[in-house]
Image 1 (cartoon, rainbow, N blue to C red):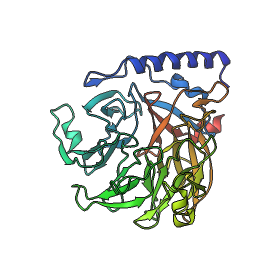
Image 2 (image 1 turned 135 degrees about the horizontal axis):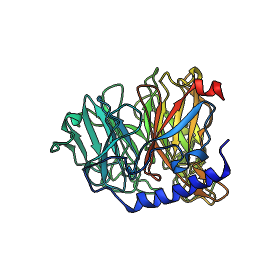
Image 3 (image 1 turned 90 degrees about the vertical axis):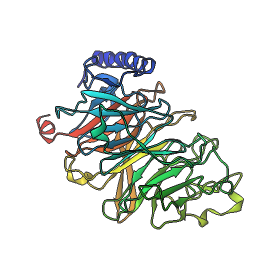
Length: 395
């Protein structure tokens, strides 16, 4: 067991690190991590709880506001941000799973959503989408980028994007509700939806409706059906409504917003217009206000066999609850297309007694070796989770 004084040192290191990261934004186009040691005692990783045999280490730090992640074919990790207006390119050039080159790829307003396709990087702002052709060949050179569209809604409230390419080679782009609770689909039918389009921006259509604010989705490795997280509305109290994990079984389904929340909560303002039975029930009701974001199915070979096919969800954590919840990675069992159980995979970013957070997980990404990356926009870092059966046996 770790000594108490080591934990105290680690906590002190967190506070100093977070303050430094928040005050000193990157201005250079390229930096290295030689200034700050990449070790597992930083950012309170010693305080995190993981299953036996698993470990979490810093993969990259000083990545201010790290959110959505996408991996290039040649191993460059691209990271978007929400309020920092920065897109990063991160390289591990010696293969030791610790970044040694962090570049500011581009600066633009709210570049939260990023996706890779055939060597091209796609970056979504609130109302526009850009493509960087053959992006890894462009690193270190003058950037070339192409505008795919610039006619999506520009409301910032829930306007930041999570984007991804599906098994159908379509690009999926959500448009969040521009409010806590409202019904503005008559103004623009794209509000509170997930849309999809061809890679060139053509053939756009609404894929799912009644989606308040999805900032994470993926596809089941076998069924190829989309699974997405959705953040429940605020201001109905600490414990309702549930946040949601949903699955789309056919295009055009409606998931309830703003009329019904979590499949069970009739909205006080709009609930009389449609009963909850009119809509698709969540695959799983998550705790209220946990703010579920990134989701991935585990398809690698590093973790034990019984982890394969489980869904992992990054819960960013509550912002307006009287007692904070979330700030963890949840693990969901999927059987025959049904979510049957959920439990924490990693927690400890929230000190419940002190009600203070040391990290807020955002997105998940699997590496080729089967390990998992986690972005943290509060700790300004990317973590790597791995499993070591030999180390477990030696304990």
